[in-house]
Image 1 (cartoon, rainbow, N blue to C red):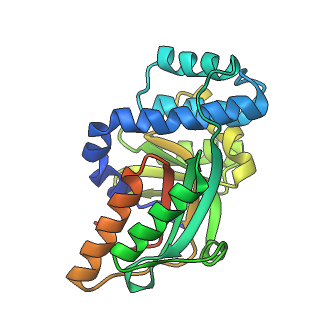
Image 2 (cartoon, rainbow, N blue to C red):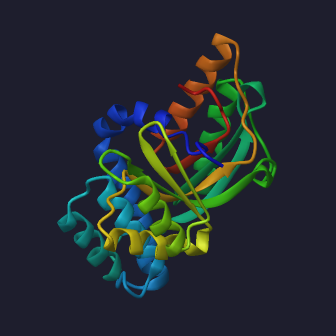
Length: 242
């Protein structure tokens, strides 16, 4: 399990992510709106909203902005009626790709997803065609600098984590999805700050792309998907992305 979240790849793209903060806030706002409409405006009583708020804070969204989106959604003025939808397909070299989207127009979003896959050498598949080869896990990443590995490992395992590893200057803590909120909250209450804390679709196997052209097409596919306003998350099993 160690190293599965590809933290180096995430860090490598951080500069791009920071430059698109407004786009990220738009996507996070959709998640918050849907969470409020499904479970209410109190994060303490709405686990999905609590996770959305934590995710927004990790992306440096100001608390006032988060509060305004929650109030707007609770008042029934949160804009369009978004629904969650998943797309699955294959990129170059047989790589598996899962796209989590939130849309107010399924036909538009499906057409855009199909266009991206076709344009960059892949193909959009049927529901379930690749998700069977991924496992949903909670993933928490903490900076290793200045922290005692054994002490943090024991704290994480006592909190309910299922795995712990140290790699590339970070500690990676893995949980089952249901245990993720409790583990995150307990470690944060113990003074642990996370570089990343979220649930992920974790590949069971990885695919390496050896050809430069295949790598370029795959990178362009991922960039196009991530830049789409309807797309919330993109999961894939490209091993040598960096």
